[in-house]
Image (cartoon, rainbow, N blue to C red; front, top):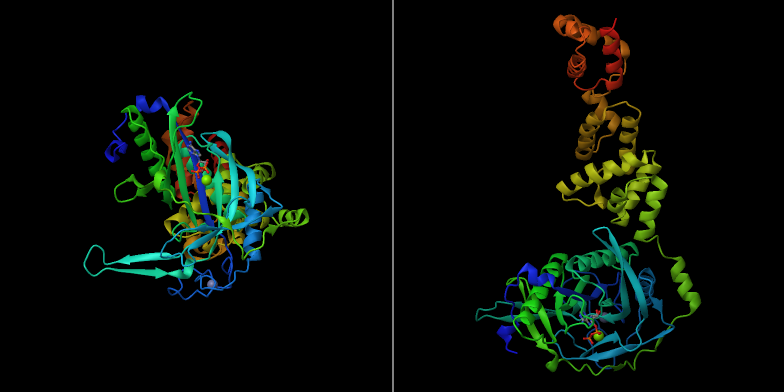
Length: 495
Ligand code: ADP
Ligand code: ZN
Ligand code: MG
């Protein structure tokens, strides 16, 4: 099969609909440890090039690795969070290949005995829940980074930064259970959420803490067997994952429709070209010559230790969502928004604990607060409004001290100035008018000025009632309690 024939002729939606995609993801995530997998070097991102290195992570002869207990614990926590069974015995192997930023000449990774196996993650797409199987989770160490400068000019240099060498990763391999780019997106979103909740990884995609390779094949709908897959490497954003999958599915269908066959190969998503491009075919696939690392003992984990890790687990996203529904009686939509991150969920609960009504808090946080944070380019972690301050405002609205409309103005000022709700209400004169006699005085003036409308009302035109209420609200700049205004106007007009 020639290379050009592997490129995608455009396929019509009718033809696309006859096929089904099959997708399995391999997700790499950097563990949130202070030090590397097998040495004491810092894992801090952005340090001066090659400053976080030592004989172990530089692969110098004779240097001996010492496993990082925290990395193992985080990998175990991730395993339990995705319902994998932690194996009593797992083993690090050497995966041999040459690469300039891999000074050892091999990556240390678990191969035939992975840390854990057989789990699942639940996703929801268009209201349908589905469990995606997890084949395995294993630990490995990362390679360094190469930086190329001056290309394509004559003054070309390549630099190598070994800081990332030996940084701990987990790889999570899914079963080929995903059927659409939307499902793959939902799966990666859920995995990211779980890894963040459990503090296994910060999942910072710009810094490469979460990366994904996608395996894709297509088959005619109803076919029993999977098609030949291609693997698309290095998808380091959700957008690239979606685009790459959409492109690759259409390309493969195009190849099959034009009478070709799919080559099992590794491809790369080219951001610039907006397409996947061949990188290497399976014929030239590496033989990594895996063998057990002789410098490292097998990893043994007791049942007691697994139970200890299980007990230290925080509440997971699905459990938190279910609890928010039953405990606070808020909508599924709000519960989904509020539990998207642990810090937002914590903020909501702190607001309720500080005395805010739960439904009001859910609503204000998921609409007003998130919009303002988004506009300000801020994160809930550095929200200028403390949960207690928001709770104070929501209590005032609930008690009718200010109207909901004024509440929005107060909220905006609290967000901008950091002042308390009480201070802003006082200085802006926004307190709701609940003084019946004050409202009555205004209403009587308006009635006196509009004898025509009074006559109309008394003659049976109920519609003009709204006119009087509107005039009183206008006179009080919207601060009169609407219920009292209604009562007072009705009383005066029917005197
Ligand atoms: P390989 O031997 O090429 O590494 P594996 O069977 O180990 O392949 O699977 C690697 C990944 O590819 C897994 O995530 C798996 O779910 C996925 N996968 C396997 N077969 C297919 C297929 N036919 N189509 C799409 N994905 C697949
Ligand atoms: Zn080191
Ligand atoms: Mg494999």
